[in-house]
Length: 561
Ligand SMILES: *[C@@H]1O[C@H](CO)[C@@H](O)[C@H](O)[C@H]1NC(C)=O
Ligand SMILES: *[C@@H]1O[C@H](CO)[C@@H](O)[C@H](O)[C@H]1NC(C)=O
Ligand SMILES: *[C@@H]1O[C@H](CO)[C@@H](O)[C@H](O)[C@H]1NC(C)=O
Image (cartoon, rainbow, N blue to C red; front, side, top):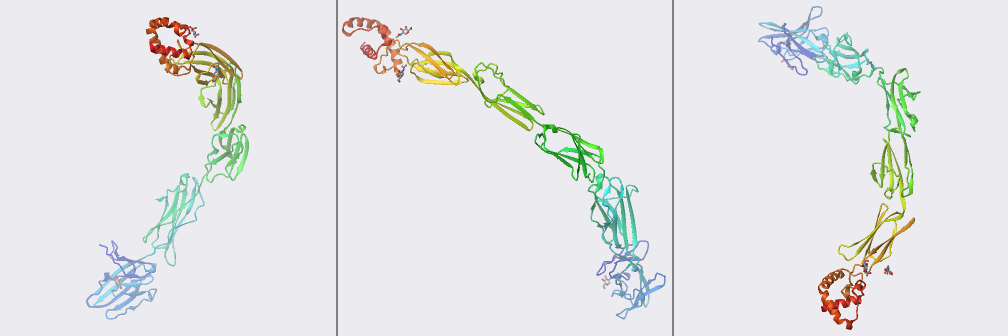
């Protein structure tokens, strides 16, 4: 049979022909007016005399409710029981029952009587009431790991029909397995209203993974589904492991504080701990840390923590306090004589192998020289940087190597242009020796490096010279000499170039004069022979020492030739 639906005015009712029965069903709400339709509104036949509503009482006797004559506007209520003041009839002949209750869940029959016919139409009434939202009561304070514990009761009250309750963990339904999850439902009916209250008790065996799990209870009802607010239960489990941590940053150095933290994996965590500090037991209560202040290398060692009630459960840490002791000898400024020896000693004592970096004059050197036979180049600023992780120490000494000056060479050579002689005097000594030349010169040049000094002097010797180089410092002096021959074979020919120190013109003149002299030698000798009595005499052997006066004459004579 096809179900037929009807919508009724102020509330919703559903008229259903239940399968297997010819009596349609209508649903009303508890406390509201229930409308019971008569043959779906098709109830006004030709020659209608009256319409009557009736029902069958619980004891089986007939219960008349009301009669409406077709000609009259008002119906006559014939009920004498609880329906007396609650029933009325609508224009379309629907029975209206005010303040619906569960006792109204029965079959009502409408009887339509006309001149030619009598028809009866029965309707079954159901009354629904939405129950209260589910709440969890009698909640457990905590759950114990592995132990079946009553978690709570989920309760919904005053509903019809009764609601179905489901427990959920993290939104997934829990199913009674008779062992780790036991769900006990109970339904109670109010003896007066007949409304049902449903309760569901959950016993649950929690494990550590249930930490933070959300438990909810969901209620399923014809009038709508509801979910309780979620509950999270602390889960208690005993400590299985303790772990000792050194909270302080590594490396720990002397003077630092060490904070030890003992953690236990139980819930709730233990309230007191034993710290075993190198064999000495300290019990702390209300916290899980222990601090040692201003540690020294003697505090290195084995540290433990355990639980006061269970010494066997312990955790161990080896603590190392880093230290670095270094002493360097010598220190500060050290002055030594050349060829002496210097003993450098670096003593170090550290918790781990220390790294040593030597620097000489800010440059890293592979290792310190032996210094068994000091040279001038050994002088300098020596720095050493000794470090282990977290600790670094710096030391330095400045070594001066001193010695009396010693001339290592004295040489001469002609400049490239042939116009000067350059004297080079090389000496060793420290502090830097001062030089003293016995001749005047130009372009005096001094370099001094690693105890080696080089002095240069440019001279223009007009005659053979014995040049001395004298070097002096606070420790002594040395002198050496060298012969320097005159640059000139003959006196310079040009009068204006006569000065000894004059520049390159002299060289040009010298070359020209040399060539001219060679070519004109024969003529010159002849000419001299002729003029001898008139102009005085000079010797060819004296030409290098000739005066400027003589050079002038020679020049004039050359021109005449
Ligand atoms: C009967 O009349 C009421 C209004 O009085 C209306 O709400 C209802 O839908 C009608 N029922 C039928 C079956 O026609
Ligand atoms: C060097 O020149 C100065 C004057 O400039 C003079 O007094 C001194 O005698 C000269 N020395 C030599 C060695 O020629
Ligand atoms: C300079 O010395 C050289 C070589 O000893 C010699 O030949 C020359 O005559 C000397 N000159 C003077 C001007 O004394």
